[in-house]
Image (tube, rainbow, N blue to C red):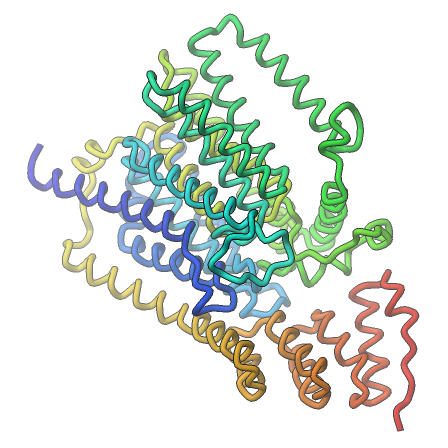
Length: 558
């Protein structure tokens, strides 16, 4: 092997490790002393920084991928997705800043999606992400850290005083559902990739620990993910090692999952354990998202903007539930894609998912021996997809899912780093590429700085009670519905109605669908009678089944 090829191999290996190190950092980073959104903001900054780092490699990565079967189709789909994302932002009436950065708390806007697309291409190209144990080890360590922190939180031990509407078991991911899903997915590689002589010990220790961790989150999604992942791994294992039992195992799985699904829908023996108000509320979310997509089939309502339309398209049955609640996510990533980006956007993302599944199964059929690393990663990937069906999506889980997708496609297509390095020609010298990398990362940090700065000042205004800073923060780029409402509500509760009204008026100029802002105008006595009546009409347009607002009487103030 000549020196040029060796240099390219080292670069590929280095790139693969950079991706995994970033994935680890994005999973565990929290900045409660710097940011109000101390989970989502630092994760988005790191995600986009990683994408910026990978930009100089993208052209060569694409050239290498399209040489393989299905490679050109995968690349074409990703390019169309990126073009589609830009069109969605351009066509939608949702606030531009909201679509770029995403909604407060989630931050799944254009920057997140394009970053994930770049990382996906890089994950396919740099196949050593899959070939060695490094990715699996880091994923497992990430899961262990998330587990330990979540258990501590469940017993009231925490070094951060979180402001959360959940049970407080949020670890470094921000939501019990995310925590339980991540713990479940990371459990699978730990068990099955342990040395053979330790696999029984690993099973007897890791599985109970994971079950206990998931139990303490009080989130059923983790159990679903763990069951799906373990079942998937055992199916491929039996199909290769004990093939004659495949049919029996498959039939057993069919009946067990049938009972579980029946229980989740409120029937059968598992009803008591699986059927909860939170499960039924997901049906409310799904129906609203489906209606939203049907009314906006081509480009959706805008990236991370389903929350602006949930109440509009919510049906009366959902509104009348005693557990009725507001959501800004469909709690199903396919419906999120459809409602926010339209059915074409959904279809393109479905194609990527189908390519991962079909290419992996096709590869398994061609393989005469059991490849436990490949099956373990596929099982972990499938576990994540299972939770995405019933839970919101988040940056860390989407990132790991993206890396696994790319690695599995790399494995299934048979990408070989050595051969690629021998065939490919580098368009730029390494010095020029490094300069481009420095430039692209610098651009990303410049773009992300306003998000960091505004959120940091938002936290400062809340901690110090500085009203003047609060008035300044709500108008800082990128603006946010949540910041407008939080500061406006604080002024209202402190009796400073003039400032509360000023903020509410500014909020509806930023986003005409901000129901909270219209509500603040409706109840503010300093607003004119006509303005308050109009605000009530707007609230009812956005939430037509709101009986409390419908019965609210607006009187003239002398």
